[in-house]
Length: 308
Ligand code: CP
Ligand code: NVA
Image (tube, rainbow, N blue to C red):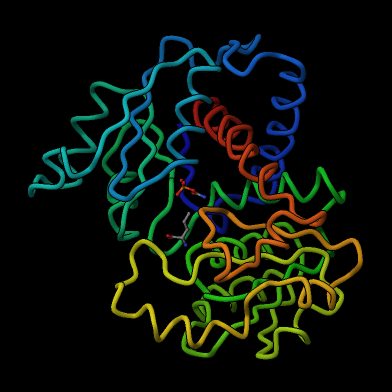
């Protein structure tokens, strides 16, 4: 049994195997109706609990569909409706759920909730986003980049905006997959120093550049995300917007990247804020392939978990 908790704590070989599986499970479905069962059913007779303590569209639907395509069944649970939201401990919840279900995916606030769930569960636990990381998203992003532009190793990825949970998992991935990452954003919203040092220690070049146009020079991939994450207080909205406006991804900024650079956003996007409509809907945008690949990448992650 294996948990999928983070990119920096999963070995590069395992990460590569998951990406390869993601590409092959996607290929195996080419031309098939969306709801069709896969030829192989690694989740046959298995029940997967999908716990959400925060809203979700992509994570919820892609995990639900993915489990069903692999022959399993799902139970989508809202944290607020569970005793978990009313004082029952995470450890007790983990031990109880392990008596009923074969895998747990959880989207939560504190990273410690995820780790406690994994410590006490006797079934695989998958990180569906915490305040600190979003590894499933970045596995889909790596798959998407490689489908469009080939191996990501040695490429230059530029993150524009808030050094948030999605940015953190990109930094982890830089260390594990061997690409360079430049962060362009204001100092108060820098990514965690420890994550940067860890990726550097693994050989990745991680740079911080305050000027967005300077940062995107030679970029193969430009990425951004919302300026206010689900765990951020609405009261910080104006202050954050004022700091982040110089890092909006628009056509002018994309013009400073490599000609064949692609654009990604994990979605949901706030069009006109962190990114313009012209970039979202423009020829360099691969956002909907990226969203689709959540399905394939997570199927590969779940397969890796149960095969362990
Ligand atoms: N990108 C992502 O995780 O989207 P959801 O919040 O809709 O799941
Ligand atoms: N950074 C965003 C990602 C949403 C998928 C958030 O945490 O709200």
